[in-house]
Image 1 (cartoon, rainbow, N blue to C red):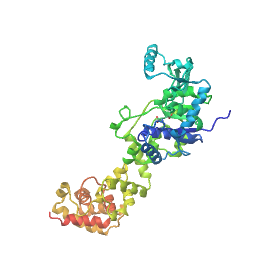
Image 2 (cartoon, protein in one colour):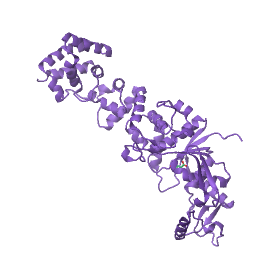
Image 3 (spheres, rainbow, N blue to C red):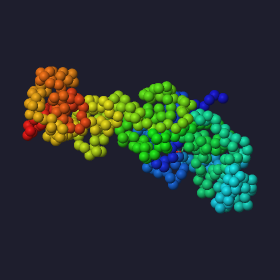
Image 4 (cartoon, rainbow, N blue to C red):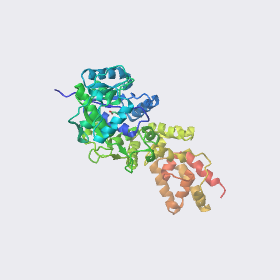
Length: 466
Ligand code: GLU
């Protein structure tokens, strides 16, 4: 038999935001599909009508599209396939692999206690009983094997064995005719041609039950790889207190999608010591069998390092749009004069920034309007002697081309002519040009402000009463 073409899928339940753990699962599925020349599909598991929301569906789509992990076909909505699920259950029923169970809640509870005491899963007496009143309220249960083992050859975790006696006859169809989660997953994965299931390891137990359902249908069981969850930096399950969980939060914190893809790929998987790799390299190298068995920890420093790399590579016009959004959200107005220069400014200032928020912060001095309020330190530096020196420097600034080398040379030469170190006037000039606070080096400051604004700020300060 020739192997089936690889089909992977991401199957989120739309009950909340897109968690970065889910996003990484989606990414791994996409990478594995690309690695093998297969297809990556998306299925929205909205079978649970009470917990699924439209808003969550939208959040998942938005998160995935931001991250660039989009499926190779239209998404499948599980709920829309309920008729097919019911039909499949009837097939199992007809084949004697499922049965109608009329146990009441109270009866079930009593049986559960007895079963627990004996260390086995409950078995309904209706497994082998024919109902007198077939239409009385009932569920349809899977008729699981009573002996033997179910073996999962997990692509990540290796072999895992389950004793069938411990796996109960799970409900396939509820009394209201609604299909259950494990049944729907199996039927959908089969119908979608899924060959490889890569998902969180919270589904390992479901894998055993699902394997039994596949076998009952006589369908080929897909390969499965269960990946460990993402933990916080402290090793505990990732939660609110670790700073962020949702993909959207990382976007709001100023991370770029390509950085996030790179980082998430590296989280729990690696290619030697490579920290930075392209999408093409990731899909060439990625194999689910190389995913590590222990939980990966979120590492903000590494994420910052990777994001800084992609910020450096990113087109400055694109960053300008992102930074404008950050500034607008902060209620800052970007003066018309700066709007046109924003990309150029970002080119000057993005060095060392870890996020687009850092870039927005670094623009603070540019966005100040004249006359600037000078901080105390700068005021203290403005002695009569320094003022006179800065007045002389003003002439030099007016006469020098606004290019980095020329400005740097001018500052050095000026210090030479004055017979002092740059420390005698540099800090005062920085304070005057930036208004104090975090600011780049002098040449970058001058270049960022431009000649006219630099001279005007200097003039404001020198005219001020001593
Ligand atoms: N819908 C399940 C979840 O969001 C995933 C099911 C699966 O991948 O098989 O946890």
